[in-house]
Image 1 (cartoon, rainbow, N blue to C red):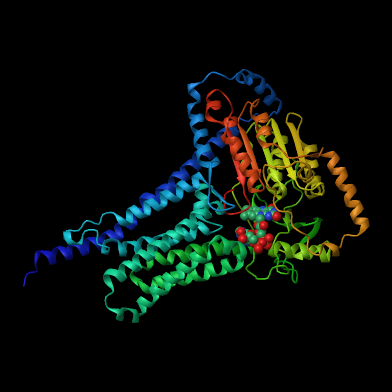
Image 2 (cartoon, rainbow, N blue to C red):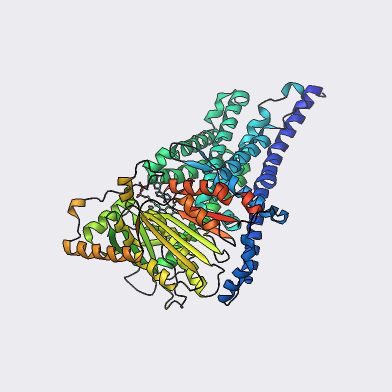
Length: 612
Ligand SMILES: Cc1cc2nc3c(=O)[nH]c(=O)nc-3n(C[C@H](O)[C@H](O)[C@H](O)COP(=O)(O)OP(=O)(O)OC[C@H]3O[C@@H](n4cnc5c(N)ncnc54)[C@H](O)[C@@H]3O)c2cc1C
């Protein structure tokens, strides 16, 4: 018996739906996600190429830089708009809109416009590919949920490996784009939430149109589907900022366990679609294996029996701040960070916290390192859980050794060799990021491998006492600076200013209350010596009382500058915001660039996964 035209159309619709489920998923991957990553990788490639060609032009004789400056002198006479500078002005305008403008996303958090665009673009792409092309041969079925309920599940499942990759410390996207893992985290979160939304579209759609027969719920594949969606939903709920902030380790462990459960359930739910799911495990295992191998290589001394775990030296350097020094057989790029695991301080074996390596692996004076092992110096502010316990440990036990495992190094800090002016601005412990960049730049200048002619190092600290954190390294770097580099170091002590000046522009990072302050292990004699150390350092560094006016300081540097400028910032979010706002104004705007002002590149390290 021949079927009716309506039945034939319905059958044909079904085939079209099945075809589109797979096709749209592929298109989204290749046309949207992969193309976007390819564009970012292309931009990085161009940057690398430009950097290499600029480096090739650095004169080996530093005095040639001074000559070069004399030739550039006419460029100081800015004023007329030069059409040949349109590309630089356009890049400046883009940088301002993308990386200096931010939008509030909560009481204390802001998001970069670049992140907003990426997230909205990604969401729009997913929804367009998910919800369009729903015209049926059978008109009665037009816009029927059947057309996108299963497609949602296909698209969601295909995003899993991407979302897992975006969370990994060692991920191929970071490698291709040069965007550090903690900066990619914002897209990881958006992608994860998108998966949950799509899975619910699938579940509700199926409930609405497909699952009239409730016997379905007795089947293993259906139970697996329900558990999977529930697990994913829990992952999203437990990742909300308040939970992450209050109980990071709880968030972290449940995040991994529930995601693994959800992926496994996906395989049971739809074994024929397992190719969407298992790559998620592979990506995760790749990251973990690499981390484990690196961790073993860096931390374990195979040739020494009984002393397998290498120690670190811990000391209290000021109330609330601990310095941890680890000697390890690795070199790192100045400005990178690493994860620290201290078994005697951690409550859970999985507890690893990120800290920036505040030292550089080579002597700042340009000489060769004497050993293949280098001192990794970490400066840790005692805040809450882990850092507070570390502080307590140093306070109660005094200076001494502690078992320490380091996992790293991570991050893609900027290469400053080709800028003619570099400005470093740090607030409090943010100096752990600017100091190594500063020291490395001085080393490169000494070696004739940098075109830097002016360096300004600004550091705002709450208490005078904090100069001890890095005072000696800073002085060594200042002493090592070559004569052809004009160098200025400005250290501001803000607490005295806070007491006298009302209406502060930005809040400092919170000053941690030292645990057992009354029970401090620092004796009177030690305290006296420390005080005299502080005074010596403060005098040598010309420490001033007050709050840096970053806009004024930046204007002062940018207006007379000749070549490209790099501004590097780390510290409390309000400090980063103040710099962003200053550099989004006429100080470094596109009109100035059109008239001959130098371009300014801004690099901000926020010590967190949320933009400042
Ligand atoms: C790239 C980077 C570099 C940093 N460098 C320094 C530094 O040089 N000196 C310094 O004092 N601080 C630095 N921090 C901040 C430091 O990592 C946190 O202050 C510390 O982890 C908080 O731990 P806690 O024990 O005080 O608080 P917890 O209560 O354990 O955690 C509080 C918050 O810290 C964050 N956090 C905790 N563990 C992690 C983790 N494994 N990954 C990401 N975030 C986490 C979470 O937002 C959490 O909500 C850096 C952070 C990052 C991301």
